Image 1 (cartoon, one colour):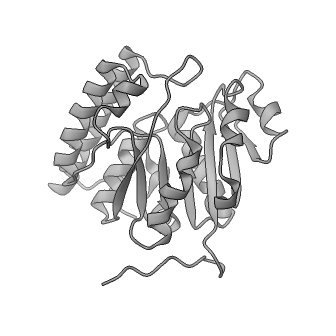
Image 2: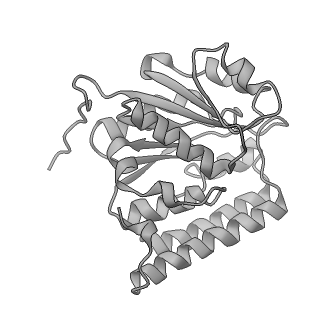
Length: 255
């Protein structure tokens, strides 16, 4: 059966909203926003997680909807606000784009196309889809190895065949964001892994598109120590999913 193209929830074309979870993004925000293909996007929402630089002041001078956290809640907590804002603004498709310039905004039309075509509920911008591309772009080799190791284990847990489970460049359908209980997830970086586990466990369709990454001084970067913590939490989240399947029921996998 050929998938039916998405229709907008309020009639007409689907509404596409880009959300930007921001923290100390003043150095890269303006350039990142300037590269967003506005013809493919209806609204851009930036959620600032209590930055101490000029992120908020700069964002308010740009064509963005700005939401400010008076207290830092973490990367996962920021995303929760992003998605709730997008849903309440009537989004049919939500794209998460980091404002640090590491992911190319010009890929947005390719990210949303499978969702609008009715072929996917989530699209991941994979840095590892093209062999060698991530390393050539400057991804540290230890991060590449850790990414491949964790992705292999997560594919086994989720019964998927993803090239990368750790990209921060993602697009979601409205139905998926309403259907998965993301508000019950972690406030930190493991939030992304939990969303993937929820989506696969609840039967949502995931597609990948190749994404180029850029590494430079101003781009956000996870260090080795925090990377070990993140990897451990990702594996623990996978173990909780397996326990859920074995009968230890978790609210994170009940809509």
